[in-house]
Length: 121
Image 1 (tube, helix red, strand yellow):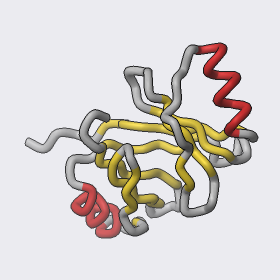
Image 2: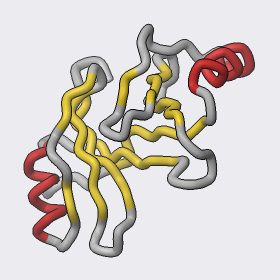
Image 3: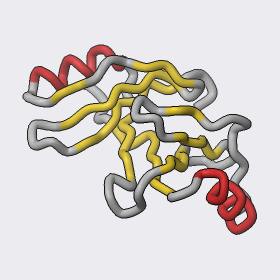
Image 4: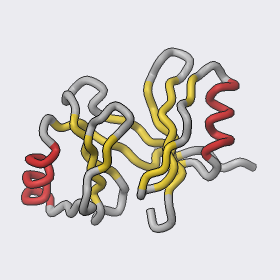
């Protein structure tokens, strides 16, 4: 029996990534990976490295598409095929330090991402 896909990662938008790293680091004790990563849209994001549930911050407009759900998958290519087969859209796979990622939209236009984690995530 196929195991259900679970939420594996999320990001939430902050106006200024550098300031948010300082604030949340001080308030919550979050430690971030050394360098932020740039998305396809040019926004910077930073992975929180010392929490049990993996997540990160991304520069953007809070309250808009402020939270991105990343669904943890074992085989990202198969998951992309499944999205398209069922009427959704799936962008090309990109590689990040945290693993493989593909931005998607469901058949109603709702944004979500597929994430195949790298070793250690």
